[in-house]
Amino acid sequence: MSVEIDILPFIDDRDEAARLADVIEGVAGEWSLFEEQHGFSIDGVDWSTAILPDGWRDRLVRVQNANTAPPSGEPQYIGWCLDKEDLCVAKLCAFREKDQNFVAALLDARLVDAEVIASRLAVVPRQHLPATERAHAWLAAKTWQ
Image (cartoon, rainbow, N blue to C red; front, side, top):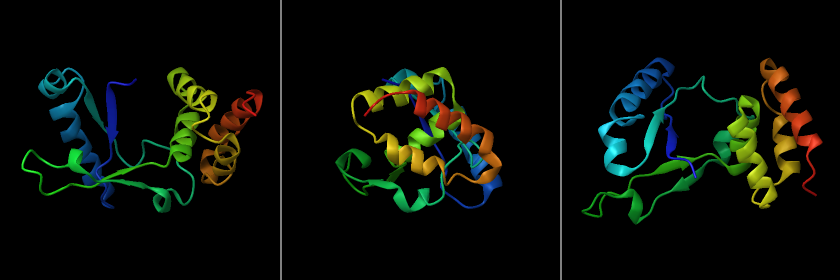
């Protein structure tokens, strides 16, 4: 289990998103008082951080429940999480060992679909072709069927 989460300020102004990501990192990043108090840290990320397939915004998963509210219970804030296979695409394009291990564990547990991941890799913007080719090769070399 990871003790960090990535948060993207979900605004279209890329410069402002980068600025807010730095603020988040400063307030709640690794070694912060926030991490000490809550047991996890928050990495602020910007629009250039992840490589994602076309259509990822349409597949975001809404999270809103009692856990997204302050102690008063209102308002219930909304979190938007990547679809699980879109997350795997981003992890495989980053291709760090920890990301490969993460995707392999999800595949082993049958929590994600290798065919869906492969189809999503095919619709990643072309400027990321080397990353998607490497990810496709890794996925093809594994056996999860």
